[in-house]
Amino acid sequence: MSEGKIGHRICCFGDSLVNGVRDADKGGWPMRLGRRLLDDAKRETTIYNLGIRAETTEGLKARWKFEAELRMVPDFPTVLMFSFGVNDANHAEDRGEETTMRVSPATSAGNAAEIIGEAAKLAPTLWIGPQAVINGSKSSQEINERLEGLNQIYLETARGLDVPYLDVLNTTLHDEAWQRALRRGDGYHPDKVGYDRMAELIWQWDGWQNALGL
Image (tube, rainbow, N blue to C red; front, side, top):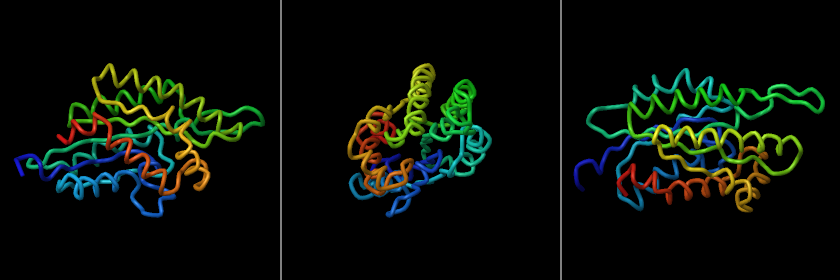
């Protein structure tokens, strides 16, 4: 293999949808990408799944750079991947018919711009937009509406930073395979089939293909 084909270190940051909660195969989409890189592309790759359950952009902002730099070695190319938003959009308080977000849209936007902007200076960076929760109750529909707003902000931020952004919100909101996977999960996290679906969407994405030189 030519130089640079071996040894990628891929750091995957985010929340439980990165971590792989409810995934019977364990590891979520990051581990699936790693296995496919080895099996299909014959690439020796180190995948770091750095998802933390229930984490918002506030927590991610405080930790990601330190954790990334610990795993970066000059001899090996690094790719930084991020996916977040659902916990920012989740309900912080419930007062009858009124709820508030855990992180306001303005704060979430500012955190995202800071995280991705700094990451892009450090290494090639990929940004995967938030995935829809189950399209069911009034509560979950409200979260999806909030996610639509955050997703648009994130998309515009990515364009401004010239960072590849994979917009999956509309796909996961209307894709029956994803929604069925959520029903088999807990409404927020899919079962293994949902993580299979996300891994496939990322694998086919030009941003991923270009970053890895596939």
